[in-house]
Image 1: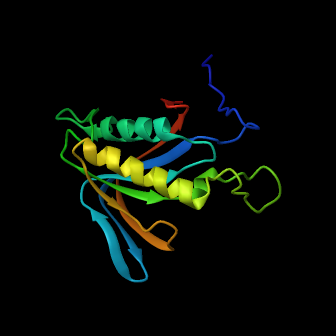
Image 2: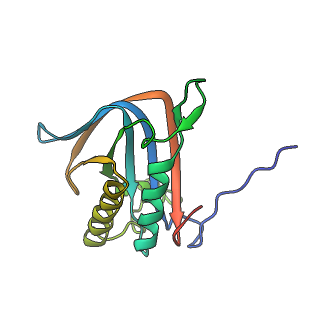
Length: 168
């Protein structure tokens, strides 16, 4: 009988780490007030939430994982290449709603999301680390009401959580 690892988190059993929902895309873009503010061709769309208590080690670990995550096909069609390997780009979009707590009632609580100034500086740092890996990075507008469009290839969607500087 297969074993299943149960998701757990150190704070009240709910998310308290940097979380990214990562999609392999043929193209992706972000529009704010009718203006295209970020666009990529083949690469990754990363919807990222910074939680309360996250630190610099967490964004370094997240950037490293995004840069090296092997979810692009090789010549045999196996997921064996990273966004760096294919010369792709990354579109990073802030999404605090990934920290939603929906355990009580029907309205999500976002109390675990980092405050605006912390989240914005952490995302900027993550973008800097991705660029230091040699990647072209586009972004949305932090705190803006964004329209995100994408062509998901595969589809391939992966959730990446980082806590205390480690992927969990």
